Picture 1 (tube, rainbow, N blue to C red):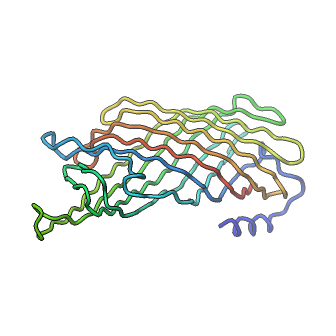
Picture 2: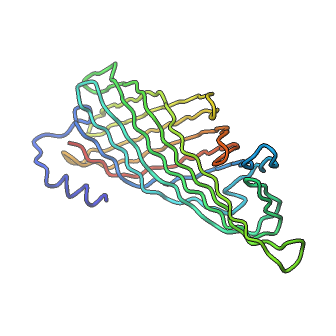
Picture 3: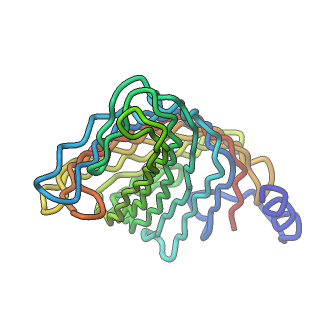
Length: 270
């Protein structure tokens, strides 16, 4: 993907060094070296079911961290108006013999069971931004956007029945899709020698059935614009959310997910 962006930029006609404050389109594509901490509780489908166990999904099932491809884009369609978007996926799986009983969506996974766990999460975000301060070498914009979270959790195991050789298969899953409105602020500063800094902060607090919780996203990046259309950058993103979700039968419980990590990317602007 990065090679394709470089090829596109190489074919572009350039007459002067691009200024990120004037570019109509900016696309960042690269890898996200993230570290995660996911904690969940998934209750049963009915009020009569036993409440689910609080589970550290990463530690309990031995699910490690994986580097992920990520893409960010900005479209400046007028002098002070822009649209920003982000997309990435975090799909992970692992198997482990668990060291304690786990209640998950009304099913009991007993201590010693070999459990195969999956967590598939996709995040897409789009926001409108208005630059209320704009100068030759910087701009500061306020924004209103929507995060879309698509989460699927699954546990699969085969366990003995009453200590006998008979077995039963446990295969349970929970999912939720949540459009979450956020407010935020973004700043871009152009530095000497064709370098610039970009930072943003976004926040949400919601208490509206069936969701209750908050979301915080903080990101900063540094870019060297090495040619008229191509730059290379590094950055860091810290994302935290916790929600209580009452959405029987698909997902009822608590989800807490924190991730953070470094970014390395190529940027193309026109």
